[in-house]
Length: 209
Length: 209
Image: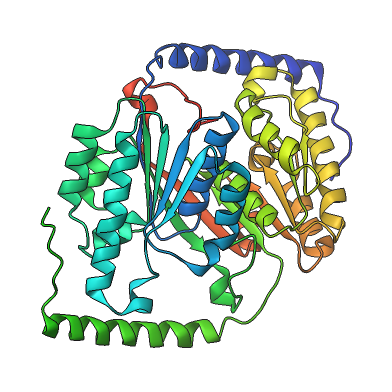
């Protein structure tokens, strides 16, 4: 790689003009974005980053001293690190509730899975109703919706009727139901392009857990 | 939503058998995943979550007391919250270097942008070469690659030749070059399905910054 970064004067001017136009267009666009509201945010898709970007947003809330909460619908053994970090450092700002028992192929008990999902949703409703809590992360709730352990229509109706206006609710997990996507304000699909499991590499600290 | 979650005995048994088969298949698959290695991880696409899931992984590293580092190639004003949280609570585990000056349409100065990108990449190389640092997050480096401020081949060659075996390097930003995607172990494309800017809602604390 060349270490020189002298840009000819003519190109420099052309670049500055182009970027000034881009900035003006962007500023005009952003001027129209003045509203503030609590968002229903969905992270779905088969790729990675659904939960970790949810945790990233929780850390952002903590950075802004906004009270927030996490309800985990699937208790994966690899969440102990994040949980410890949240509860031991920021327990005053962020509540953490692990309601699920594990993936459904781990428990192999449908009644127990349904009971855990419904207990998680009951806890979630209490947290969402509390207007002092500014963000509620419902981690892997989409799995419970996909398996039919929770009714998607019931969840959507609750969000529309009872979510305080300024509260953000983040719902993660693959296979988000269409009705939830329709209701949401912000939906990102994390698509898997390449995954190291294919190359025989196992889940590793810092990456998967 | 019905509050009853009694599952008929026959269905319960069928579910348990199906999930037992799923678990067995999964366990067999996971048994083949025994390797550990430092990964080259790319978050790209036009959707949200590229940087926040990078920050989520940094928080996971911190939870595991793995030394780590962040190099920001684009200094957005809204990263102050994360930066303050990282540096004031976990500065002993995580270094934070903001090298970029802002989006290129903010600076409107190509020479300065190139200089900032190259200084960021020089810092990144030092951090990656240090085997005590377990994860290096190169936030928004893909923007610098896309604008030609850094040479993608040079970055890929460096990662292949000099990255210590156990170090994870995370590269974020839309428009990751194809050569980087080919080299990477784990690539996720964050696709925008729905965005609240379209509904006139501005960037908000906890969500965008």
